[in-house]
Image (cartoon, rainbow, N blue to C red):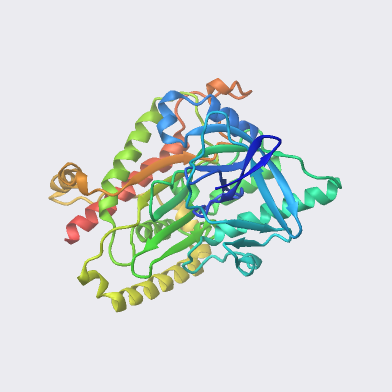
Amino acid sequence: MEENSDNGTKYISLQPFIHQVGGHSSMLCLDEATVCKPVVEREQLFYESLPESLRSFVPRYYGIIKVRLIQEGEYITLLASSPDNYSPKPSSTLKRLRLRRNGSIEVEGASLSAMFDAEPAVDDDAATINPWVLKCHKEYITRLMAKLEEEHCPLKSTDFIVLENLTWRFSLPCILDLKMGTRQYGDNDSLAKRQSKMVKVVTTTSAKLGLRIGGMQVYQASSGRFLCRNKLYGRTLTAAGFQSAVRNFLHDGTRLRTDALPPLIRRLEELRNALMQLESIRLYTTSLLLLYEGHHSISNEETSGEKNEMRRSRSIEREERAERANSVDRQDEMLKQPTDFRVRCSSSCNANEKKLFRPVEKHREEEPLTDVRIIDFAHSTHRAMDDRVLYSGPDNGFLFGLNNMIQLLKSILVDADQAC
């Protein structure tokens, strides 16, 4: 965090948020515990009138800040004053960011413009910084510069919303961004936008599952790097491909992280209980974030299996390519088939159900850091927002996806338990 002074006011140079896996807004940080993004009035109102029972499931809201754009030769800097109800941390491990007017970025002197020039592909390779972060920064800077040229005058300031950085407690945050529900447009969207969003629902896993991958990063202990996937990848998946992708999210290159499953399942069930009690809320176009700590100790036996892991990685890549190649032909079949993430039962089904929850209490101290939150409320509504459309009953579209996710994680845990 770097500070500048102007007429007695201290300004903070905003730094990059390097763990953004989805969305389209450029995400920046005041310090390592916050993220900032351009304000959307409806989202601001949602945070300010949020139902109390939902507060622990959304990022903490710190208010609005004014961000100034300063041009210094070929570079531009984004400066912000501290919000009234938040004191930025004095020390920071954030990387030094330099933005060029042409839309490229330098991080600690290393140019990343070459990574910007190419659109992140569906099958992005593992990267030390998620390519989606670079894409979002470039698009934002390009829009800013276009606005400056159009107005022929300096852009004095713009409003940003300041939120809790959900990843700041994690050393190596593994993140799954899920677009939730079977409706992906807001009440105020135009007809053209509604139709476009409806097409994306019908042609993806959103229609069948109420779930679609919007982005993902998972730390690979075998390589020491993050494996990244973006929303373009998520749109290619069938229901079966979605299940495989979630299993890959829970695999660190050496083992399936079953230790993260019990706390994630508990948290998702707590969220479900809270949402079932809310009679007017609609979380249209929101994302559900699942996070777990990627750092863990690796045994000698695991590290000695590097060659096996390389073969496994190649196998996963081949499966994903085949899945994408067949996705178009399988869309009709996907929409006709009923959702089935149920835990497979046999004569020992009751015993399996007991085994599913027994480790939660027995090994609670061994559980990794995890989190589950909802983000992106630009099209959400609830009774306190006094919108023209007032809904009654719980958000069944969101709950449909949430239930399917809970069932899928439970089935992965039971399958892993049976394999042991």
